[in-house]
Length: 547
Image 1 (cartoon, rainbow, N blue to C red):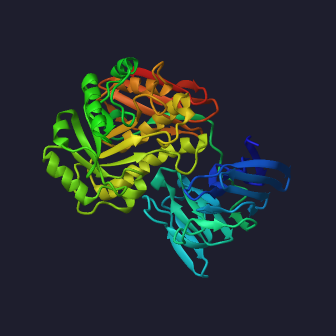
Image 2: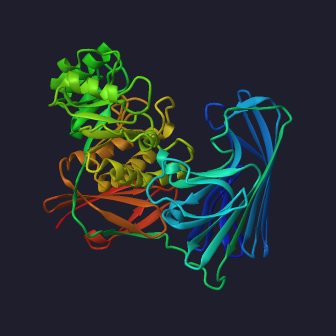
């Protein structure tokens, strides 16, 4: 069962699909973004579930949903029964009873709840603790490096003026993490706590039972009004921001480019190419490619590492991203070694080679790099279209948080990928990737990062293959025509997910408009006289005009 099914219980609306309950709302206000049951293997891999025997029943008093879900992959064989009930009086429950049909090792078998950022970030929250106490706290505004809430029995928060939610957690102890550390667009409450050893040995026949109960209170005669599907783009007040320097990554170990690929890349007017110096051959080949395309290299190096005598590559390198051989964050010894070898004139950056989470937790005290760096990909916890698209907005919060402890140190986001390099994503060559990229560019550019390195020059993670350019190639082509210009912040009002990036070069303007949804949407563009643009699913359009 893969379809999305809207359900309603009095003032509560939600969407059921693939075993998840999403967008639990009162009118336009989201109470909970998502409730689902996760089965993870011993490497944190999500084992997908197969839905069977689903039944959805609706009445004037609410709705009920029942289904079975089977997770099978490798050593994992787990089945559970889900029962979801919504009542018109403002009550909802999500009940799981499951059993392991094989022994396997797992890092998590649990109900998970996603709390929406718009309604929660920076807002007060009262935690009822498993020890019987009560803690008055608040959801973090800046990204919390560690779990903000521990030992949770229930949580209470206001999600709209005059509307309160109480979420009760039945089962093992729960805690909350800030998933923005991995560029996810939510807070997540889950079980068991990460302080407990993992993976655990799940025995064949072992049973699991958990239940989430949501109660909402407020004036049922005054429901927050639903938003409009028609979006309206408006220009925000404030200073324009320099467009970040934009580059692409060379595929790891790439030593030469096919002629067709190189010819197309010249059209993009890139500011740099990223190359991972994983061997002498890779470093030498990357320098030859950069020389052919007449662009400098952003060189990622491990110290101590496989390539020595780095100073000989300095003429082709605009900056060095220094990694440690035994950790995700640049170690002081590695940074000092790079500075000593490359000299004071080299631009030496330090940071994380995995996720922002590592940099947020180890903020490199005592290091004073010329720039700080971290990578991004939006599929650490979820791979579905809706989640991946929603995660673009969090890239702004990551920059805000990095600024809180790095000050005005230039930020380099490198590399930005649609998914992990170990797993090619078929959406890379589709319009989906182009639309996602516009959203990512908007939030990183408007947040003021210095440089961004996207995707790869070609191949399964690239902007093209040897035969043709992908839709995302067009994004960089449109930007290349405005290289070195400024970005004017914009805001899209309305309920639909349309993202815009406004470029300015003197009196010239170019607005990139991307539909981040699987539905057709309409957007009114106020900066150019209120023109209406109709967008197909995941479509990209642009408008040029002069002031």
